[in-house]
Image 1: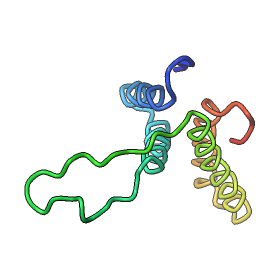
Image 2: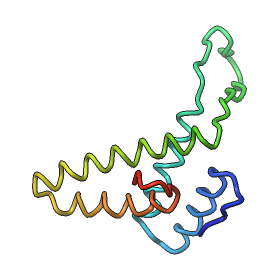
Image 3: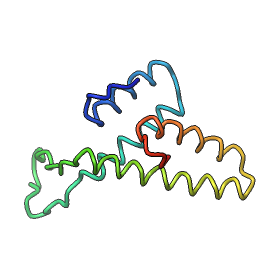
Image 4: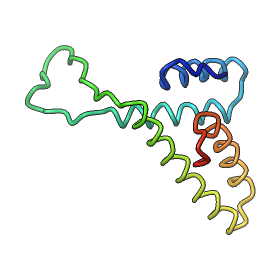
Length: 116
């Protein structure tokens, strides 16, 4: 599913929902990984002196990532998978290599520059 005018995170979440409904396990796993990577990158350092010890803690502020930063992060994730794929192929681990190839196909849908 390609909603090219949507912000990347919204597109990933919409595609995740569609993949879950279609029971596309590898796609669901890969999209969750992509969303988690982006979410983790937006985390900021928490000042422990600010966090209350009792009651509810307020939502921690998040850093806004630009679209370029988001795509750069996903490119890095794809490159890591490409390196791991090469290592699995060198070791003859066929099933692991096949899984990474499937993940890279999902990454390729979002990255049009050949990094995946």
